[in-house]
Image 1 (cartoon, rainbow, N blue to C red):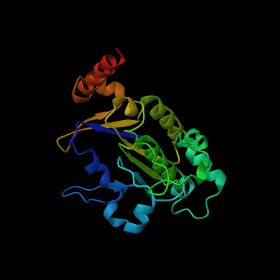
Image 2: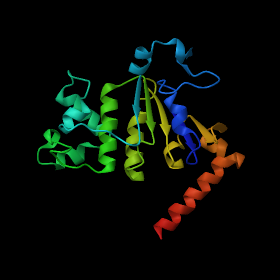
Image 3: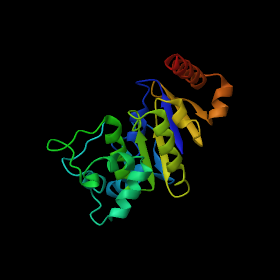
Length: 217
């Protein structure tokens, strides 16, 4: 798991958009699986990457249809398991029509967190070698975020997770953390290493801890 953190506007989304080549770097190279991403056929590259953004688009369809989009052969069991991994299953089961609940213009309106988890379930069902979550847990609470990340870590060894987050708590168990500042990698290391350096990451961590303490009052 690779964590990516930094202040707003630091370049986090720009960085991860280069993985599926939504953007190309103006200098340097992006390597995917040891190869220059520009040498991999674009269709092949994008089939290898699941990319979930902060702002989620859902179709005017059932919840099952949204999760299984692009996976026509997906079974009910596979859809249910993807929803469970995305911590969405209990929400779906609370709806009278369950997975057949329609969302969108002719159906119910999901919360921001439910939309994000539906999109994550879609990506998990697709099961790509690389999964990029670009602040895709921003609308869920920290407890739900923790549950989802625990499940995602079980995929370690068969799937690479790139997690962009404004919350230090989300990335602190990552194998490596990139700290971006003004479009550059300012720091790199594990959570403990970065805290010990007393740099930007440590300052962001202290600030967020203080905010959490104030909110708890």
